[in-house]
Length: 368
View 1 (tube, rainbow, N blue to C red):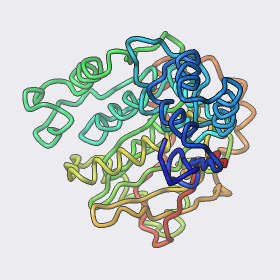
View 2: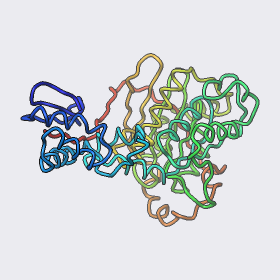
View 3: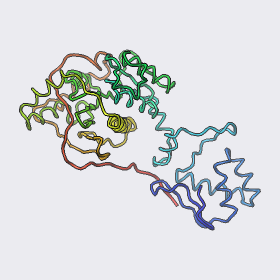
View 4: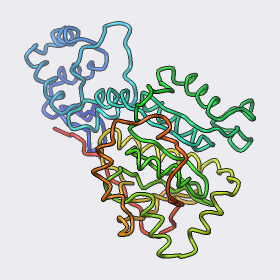
């Protein structure tokens, strides 16, 4: 609660979620300032009486703030005072209904796979766990390298990436689950790769009707997307076919890139790419607008502004016509379907289109 002047107080400063109260008496302003210290309604009413504000007026002011979704109406324990998670407080300010806890409840039930645990992959996995995702399924059989140090500790070098990643996840985020029941399907699987994503892995995810997001580290950039929802919109094979239309030699080039040794990722680029991927995965889990639905966002270490390339379904790809069979197959999945090893060639790599970046702001409640 912020004092503006005689008779005026406000909550917050961002126009998307701030509330301005006018015509207040000095006593009412003192009562409002006590909101952050009074854990129960009884405490607030007692403060109101001591300041000369009637219980009816106190309840009226509280109701006005609750209607603007800047107060959590649920009772809090008198002691100890427990601060809400930052994510709850943040989404309470931006959700139209003010129920930030609902966002965290939904995330706690969600499961996200991260296939590829280099410097970017583990940073992404840790971000998802920190944001409240209930199960983060980490997979990578490669060994931790010196270039992975950052999210990894130097003593992890030489160990299996998956094992070390799970150890870090459990240590920092004890709530997170790192395994799932047999046959369970993640809400989203993120495939982290260098140069090109494994077309076999992508094909198997599509055939298994698993939503998946390629995150591909190029020579100087990271490409995030498109988010593939099998049976809807363009898939990674559509992207591959569009690239082949533009460059007939692309399949040969992509095959060689797939076999090449992965290059290390620059630290800030890994962090930027992981943050962008986490942002989009959480948008999908939360049910918000996803910028990488049918699009690729490309970032580099020179500019924080993503470059956007919008993709369409390719006429030679069968991903949209396969929608009905994929829907019938939903629910009959196992772990092998998430990371299997058979399927048609589908090459994916970062796009370097010069289209301008774009971003959208969540709808927020505000009142006066």
